[in-house]
Image (cartoon, rainbow, N blue to C red; front, side, top):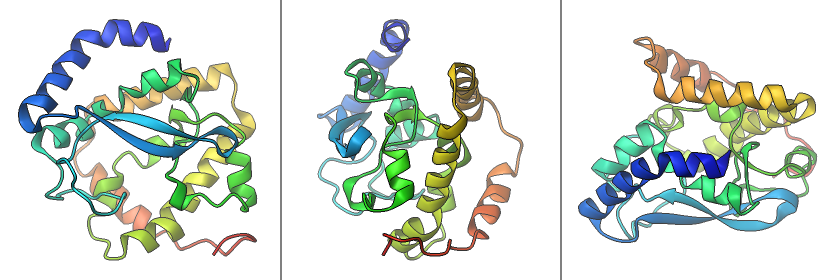
Length: 212
């Protein structure tokens, strides 16, 4: 499926790569170290959506100056994620599976992390859909790192772990359709604002063994 996707989408991929290059030059692809199955790290591929050598935290929120104009478009429609089909071909990722995290946010001693890391990471899963507008959700947060660690990341892990307990081929296919619908179909006006209020109301989970 990944090979077929790359073949079908090759004209679009070429256009997107050209757009990135015309606005800010090379590199066209952004390579980021992530933690995969069994705790092994790999280079996740994305179309570059920020200025070169931007620095700053790995977490981003909407409106940041380091995000380019083309990058905002790519992120809005999740097109920056398409190069990860190459990661799937390499065997580093699956189409459906827990989103791979950067090493600084992974706690191998946490039982929940241990459950999630048993699976091959994916391009999408329930957490990806629920937090599709993560950058908007974080727009009003002052302590990005703390909020991500204590609120958003635990929720993502819980969603991913719960899905892995019941996943099968049919659920993975349904997950792909859900992702397409969430990313590319029009959404009702005000949905993002409602989602932002709901997520901000989630209290931090109780500490589990192995967490800071």
